Length: 339
Image (spheres, rainbow, N blue to C red):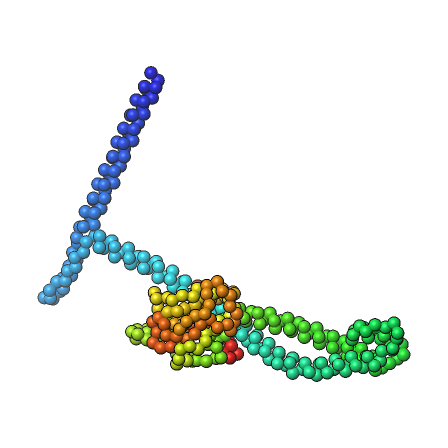
């Protein structure tokens, strides 16, 4: 008996839920029809001039008015957002350009210092040889002494100092100066190696081996060579007036892809990923000689200038990107890189 009562209650509950769903569906469907009917309603605005000219009238539906209003509101909300993103991207590009200019200035200063150190290395080596020779002559000959080089000779300094040798005191002073100079040279060498590693990881080299070619189309707003309509040129074009000149990797990196791009019009193109978020792209190659996943060093030949894809003549299209932002490749190239 209890089971039958449970089944009866269950059926009643199911019928109640079905009835409620029907009512909800009917209400929603009726509301939808009402909204559609309202959207199809038309209104006319009439402009009546005060003179005898013909009145002007504009007729529109509620649906059209709603759509246009939504589009205008969306544009009013999205335009400030796009402007804000563009401003932030511009600020990041400016900061990156300023930082790179500082690095390039430091690199030029280091090159000058290297030149100065190189010119001073010969007198330094000569002075070191003179001190070593003088110490060798001053060392007393002993049967149980061992040949320990320059610094083993200094073990006899106390003996000569007790004899009041002014020449030996001078040599000790010069030796200390040479030690200090050596320490500075080692520090400078380490700094130079660190800067060299950094520069090899940033695309600063001229893309064509031997510094060949000239910029036939710069980065930025340019007329499209096919239509004449202004457009954003994402890189710079370098031409040597012929095909076959070697194209090199402008920084150490890993080849991301090397393929024929018929969709974007780059033809035979190579994309390389570098340190610090940089990437480079080379387009319109006659052929490439690298493959995806290959590690390349700055100066390695990756392909040859060609005329593949959407191209008006033999050249290489060269792009530099820092994260999601495009860079002007000409601002990245260090003058000594075009060599």
